[in-house]
Image (cartoon, rainbow, N blue to C red; front, side, top):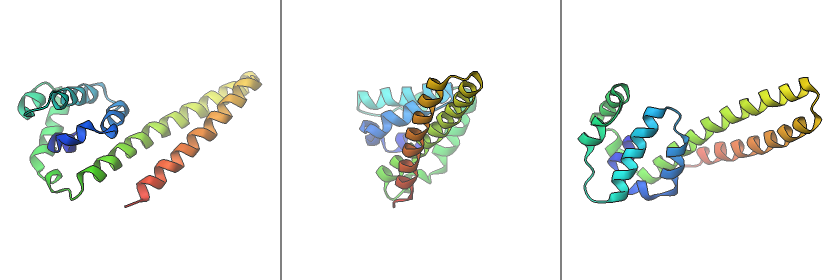
Length: 140
């Protein structure tokens, strides 16, 4: 979010939409949504008002990161943002893989052959997606 607030032009990218969908914490998603709305309206980004709208714990963390200044020094914000979004996708994918594995184990315990087959196919698909994301993260 700090990268997006620092470089609002990134908010118009497909990565910004996907990144927002991948955030797990509700307070973080709300803050991201508020930032995205300000960016979509164009014009000046009101960082203090945006931060003020956040839950206190999230506000403090994001404020510290904003004040740090290191984000402004990122040499290629577009590439950095794409990598951050890929990492979020990877986290979400890992959670989905774990859930699929549990569902497959439950289906095996029930003796539900169709569900075992479906979760196996889904597991292969998820692992393939994970490998693609991991490969993308290895690229410069």
